[in-house]
Image (cartoon, rainbow, N blue to C red; front, side, top):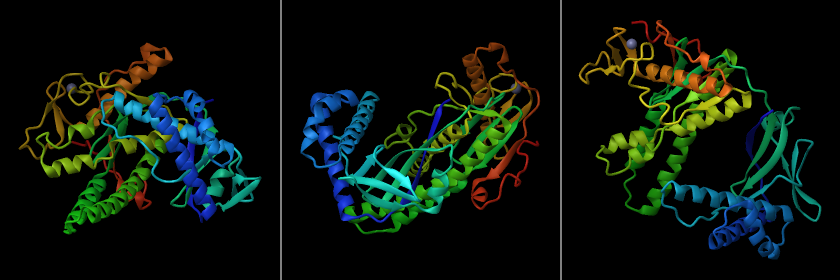
Amino acid sequence: MPTAIKSVKQSFVSSPELLEMMETFKRMVNDCIRIGLRNDASTMKRLSKLSYSQLARYNIVSYYKLHAISKAAGILANRKQSIKRGYQTKTPYLKKGILVSCYGFKIADQILRVPIGNRQYFDIPLNRYANKILFDSVVRVRSFTLTASSTVSICYSKEVGEVECDTISGADRNLANLTVGNERGGVQYNLSQSVDIVENTRSIVRSFKRNDVRIRKKIAGKYGQRRQNRINQLLHHVSKQVVAKAKQEKTAIAFEKLTCIRRLYEKGNHHGRNYRSRLNGWSFAEIKRQIEYKAQWEGVPVIQLSVTQTRGTSKVCPQCGKRIQEAHYKDVIHERQLWCSKCLKWMDRDVVAAMNIARKGGEVFHRSKGDASEAMKGNPTTPVILRVDASKLARGLSLKLTEPALAK
Ligand SMILES: [Zn+2]
């Protein structure tokens, strides 16, 4: 059975000794990074051979040394990947102290006991939420991470059986909504609030007029963090709902690959400032990340389609396969709609994309399972797509607040 991993975070009260250990851990990681860069080594195996003896001078429990090497290997591997993709990279280093281990710790009596050497422990009381999660009998606690900013994150896992799915839903990610569905129907989650949050933050940051780079950076950082937290919160409600629905209806979820979005909207591509800021505030990767890990936890299969597999998902009619036309830009009634001249009707472009992704996902899914005959064909009926406002989900209202979107 495949293993799914999650983590739970909480704050704790640190001690000078613990902070010192985090600092040591950071120094060890940075030493390993230097060694790795000098020898062009980024695998755990080579890096441990090269650097373990160098870490002898640090007075810390030896499994923290192993984790420092592993952390450095991770950082170096990421850097290697970025270079491979053609991104510019700076020399990496760990900026803040952390402490990671999957050995030596204990959880007993609602306390996480972090080993600090000489058979001594630093005790961190766990809060009610963490306890509730970690004391589930199917869950196995794997590791902990402490940070200098006094948060502890505990990683846990469980074995999940995959949900047997007979349908596939396509997930179409847009700036202001997420549409998940197939020809039987689906849901469109309104995310326009996330666009507002981005806009709002931007105007707040802009209203600070002090012409001092350091202050500006600080303000932008603070509001940027707040913005991210608010948006992620909104997306959590949506992703939870999407996965719950998929599990209940036994539907796998297919994603198209969105590549180079950030690069598409960088400076100098002849887009306006406002447009650029709006699109660069788009959390297209975050919503997918959330759905993926939640789906994995629930055993719902997620299908990742490649760029070639989803080419033209927004250009062909999902029902007859004919190329469809966009509405004229002056045609406000049919904004964001597409016209099929064979089926003689207007369709919502997000619904079209979701249906096409679902169909492609179905082909890929059934091919991987070995039955090509199941490849779905177009259905003559128009699906009913329910509309849900994500900000209302956040206020605890569920899918009841719906209205058919394609009644026309
Ligand atoms: Zn058609």
